[in-house]
Every structure is written in structure tokens, then in C-alpha cells.
Image 1: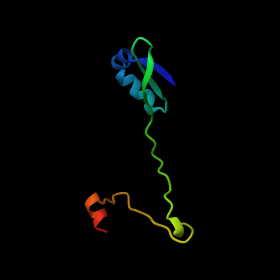
Image 2: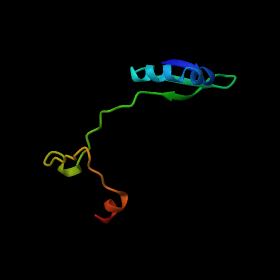
Image 3: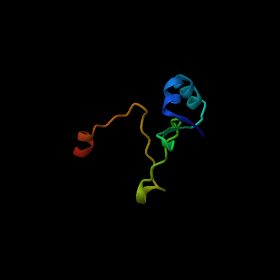
Length: 77
């Protein structure tokens, strides 16, 4: 992981984003002690499989990529 100060990060923002897009992590340090206060990491595309409790080995559920359910609809179920 590369570590940069806030000033370096601001000055090279586009370059830092390109590195993250390539899979690198960047730590952002701040203050006199230059402690890492934030990390910029690549977004993970892979989703975790959800278990169905007692039905885990029996049933399967698949959702379309464009499936949407509001909190209100969810609570009405």
C-alpha cells in the first residue's frame, strides 16, 4: 500500500484514482505524526452468497440485476 499525505493526494488526485483502478490501495496520512486516517481501495464487484437458513441446501433464490425493492415494500411483505 502506498501512503501519501493529504497535500500529495490533492495534487495528484487523478493519478491516485488511476492506481486504485489498477487494484492498488492508497493510504492517506494527516497531521504532524502522519497517521493514516483513510484508505482508498478498489471497489469489489463480487457479491457474497446469502444463506437461506434451514432451506440453504434445499432452495435457491436468484434476483435479476435490475431488481429493486424499497424499504417500504419490504416492510409490507
